[in-house]
Every structure is written in C-alpha cells, then in structure tokens.
Length: 286
Image (cartoon, rainbow, N blue to C red; front, top):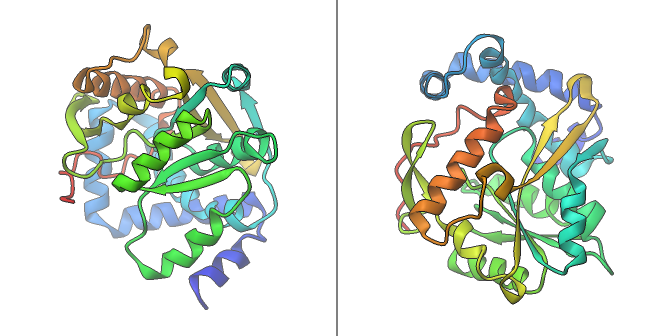
C-alpha cells in the first residue's frame, strides 16, 4: 500500500482514534530512538519543563503526526477561534498579514482554518505558507495533494519561494511562517532560544517591511489540540502585544524579539511543543 493510500484510509478515522494511535506512536518513537530522547531531555531541561506537562509532550508529538491524514484528506474537523478579530481588522484595512506559528500544537490547522474562513475565493485573501520540500520521494505526492485547497498556496524554502511570499504581502494577502524552523545557511542569525543560541531566520523582519504601502499586520497564531478528539482552537494575537512594542528593522534584534515571543507563547501550553525538533542544529548549506 502506498503512503498516499494509507493516508486516505486513516483520514476516515475519528480524530479521537487518530490521537490515541498518535499517543502510542509518540511513546514508541521516544523509547526506540536514543537520539530523539537526548534531544527531548536537553530541550525540555533548557526550558525548565518538568512534571506532567513534560511527559505529556511525548504523546502530543505523536498526535501531531497521526492527525495529519484527517486534516489533509478527511472531512473537516471542529475548529474554534480566539482572536479572529485581529485578522478581520487587518483585512478590512487591506493590509498584508504575516502569521508566525511555532512548532506547537497543530500548526497545519492554523493555515487550513484561515484559508477556509478568510482565504476562499472569490472575495477571500489567500494565504501562502513557506514549506521545505520533502527529501523522501514517497512523501511528495502526499504533500502535493494535501495542500491543494482553496485559499491556500505553498512556497518552497528557496529564493523563488521568498519572492512569492513578498508578492503575496504586497497584494495584501496572508503569509505563514514557522519562525522556529532552522533556515539554510546565510538566511539567519544566531539568537537565544530558551537561553541557548539557535540559528534563527531573519525572514520575519524582512517580510514585515514589504507589505502593501509598507503595512503588514504581524500576528502570532497557533492551533491548540483539544482533548478527547474535540478538535482545535486557533489562537491569534498581535506580535506587538507580546513584544510590548514594534518589531525591530535590525535583523539581529528582530530575531531575538521573535524568539522571545515564541518562548512566551510556548510557555502557555508547553506540552504541545515539539521538544524533539532539532532546533539547535547547524544550518544546512545551500
């Protein structure tokens, strides 16, 4: 059975069943991979995470993987909103929107929820998300079909993809980034993240300056996974509120600000952050 066929089969499952499967897969991965355990232990230690929230993150990481077939190929999942008024205000003023979403909760659902509510044609403002093309050939047909939906576009992590993001903002559309994703060499700076230097993209500050008439609304968004398969709650908050002021135009300072904002958001629901992600690795050479 191909990966695409398996994904379509799993897409029929209830979300609660997929989350139960994901919890099991998360713990099996943690037990089977010493390298993964070392990263998880070190990263949770840096963040000062302990107790039940720390251990819950193991199962939550597995849920994030297991729920993807349902999100990509299954019927719509229940999604609630907290802070949607910030999006509505930006769209009313025809401003571009730059969404910053950490590796937390279900980051796939944030883009889908925006596309369904605000991005669908003919009147919607579509969202363009930055993604890294998969290295494994088996994943390519899955991702190509999964991301084909009204109001949602994908841009690769290349110079052409960055230009695509800039054009979207200039047209007053939305762009989605994972700012805690390690960028290629030359596209970031080293900035503290939970007290440890992490190679951090400078793309956020660059994009913040290229919107229509120089106006871009900077929003932090993340999809909280609700218990018992009840769906998701998308949280939206202006970046300036988290920072206590505007984002700097200086790349180093802006990277430090973004990392600080991501830390603040992650601490609100640390059990749903992907602590096993290799956040502190050296950037790959382009």
